Image 1 (cartoon, protein in one colour):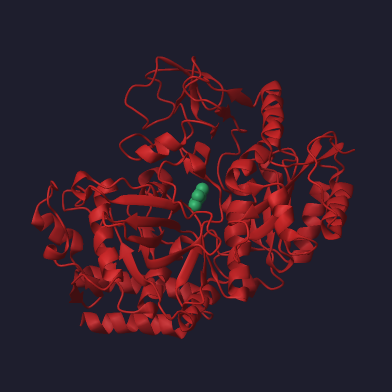
Image 2 (cartoon, protein in one colour):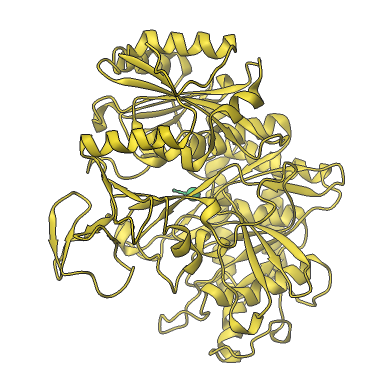
Length: 590
Ligand code: OXD
Ligand code: MN
């Protein structure tokens, strides 16, 4: 039953017993223990090509790269089919779908019964976080999808390294995944935080099936973090190095489509010659309080699972370099000579493409050639500005946290909180505007607290309480900021150029965190004075910047009311301190 030369050897009886039990349920023809080796990768790539869902790309243009196609009904995370299965509904809270654990296990057990018959079960041991880190966690994913194995090998540290970290213990996440028949009617992503278990069935899309990422690193992770006294957050981590060689680490949470990967890979403009932005992570931060009382962060991942459309040399040159080799593309368009293409790559698509569904596509066609949620899975070691400290077990010390959203009005370019509780309030009320493409209604603010709305594995009110409580542990808490690169003028034009120019805002954040920049006090927090921002060489007027920074009392009164409405949906578990913070800000507005 075992594959011969891909053995990861384990004598861990907990692992062996659980794999046996799951195999009895799902009844695979074969079990393969994966080691993450290159020979194993090559075998799975050859299998994908033979089965027709994987295509090797042009080895001269994109060495080591492949393009995969998914089932067209299976192209995104499915929040309505994602469940938190805690003993009580109250523990999951009002922002999560809930199923009782017994009911969920029974329902899914029936679906898993024999689901792997005729297939191979791959046993994927993986480690989230740097080896030897106090924050690192071991997971084992059992999957019948070779596509998942190929992705997991890039996104997590896979194989013996995980078994070595686990030793003889029972402390591993139990992840079971079967594509089953890929039917949306039988698709469920269930999390059992109390059992450190994830059961995913009926999908083969990244966020639903690469169980280390959203499921373990965020949903289960956030639950464990509260119990164990740390943070699992939907945040990028970057290190900004000055020409003098001083590096300051910043973590930032933005909801999707707000440029998190771009900010994590920011290229400073000419004015900031000599500055370097190092990427520690682009999506997830695990953070704990060090013995020195500072907050230390690691990126639990090993690669980037990024959105392809819109990625180009202007928006993110480092990402373009990162995805030039050894990258697995999903649902992009492919040219006849084996190159990739997507909307927003350039203005000139080739005459002919194979679209994301494998159909011939001609230039000028009204259909999208690449799926809007097409992705690249790329090893982080390809990033020319990968932080040299990414494998440091204790992580990097965080000096500032930024919560950012997409807001046409109200929220200033940058706003510094008065204190920790105010900063937690900023995160808790983080909002972002929906786009016409997503909902048909433009400018509707959706609250996405700390960008964790789809990813918090327990009651959001308790999550806020955890954030508030952690202040007591932090002798040197990071300063907390709120940002908005997307504010518009009366004619609908962006007031701030964004992208690399965000370096100017980041510089002020760094100087504030290090206690050496001045600021202006408003009723809502601190903003930079015009003279506190370096605007040299920037093609915007001082009036535009003033407008981008403005705190408008009427807009803020409405904003605070809207936050109050959101808070009502979280009662009764909403911490009193946050509602009182809201009242205080209202009173300060006058
Ligand atoms: C992601 C997401 O894919 O947040 O990172 O949806
Ligand atoms: Mn994300």
